[in-house]
Image (tube, rainbow, N blue to C red):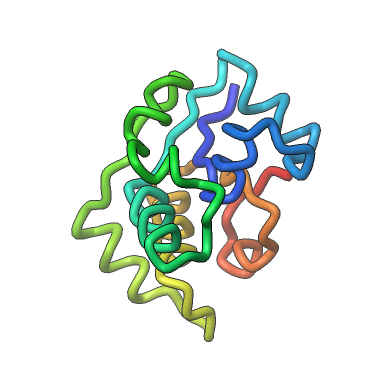
Amino acid sequence: MASLLIDTHALLWWLDGDEQLSADARAAIGDTANPVMVSAASAWEITTKHRLGKLPGAAAVARDVAGAVASQGFAELPISLRDAERAGRLPGPHRDPFDRMLAAQALSADLELVSIDRVFDDYGVRRLW
């Protein structure tokens, strides 16, 4: 059993049944023994990028991220002040605030991050893909 934090793109691919989601990621997310968490940062990212026209296919999810997450039996992961401090203090040039938050939360809560993005490896995050 592994406690998972699902990256935004992996969440969207899971919800869409998209083949871009790796077989290992699909199996881990689908295993009911693995608690799956979705960060509030992902809701922020989905709604922001949809509003800006960068995620036109995510309209239904953007209208009700919490409902989409709940429909899958996933848990919400709120952002704490400590998470925000840690994200802000992470070293390196990576500027994406959503990725920095996911890294901070994965490290703080010892979660395995389901993500295709290798940038997380630079932070010592356990990543599943």
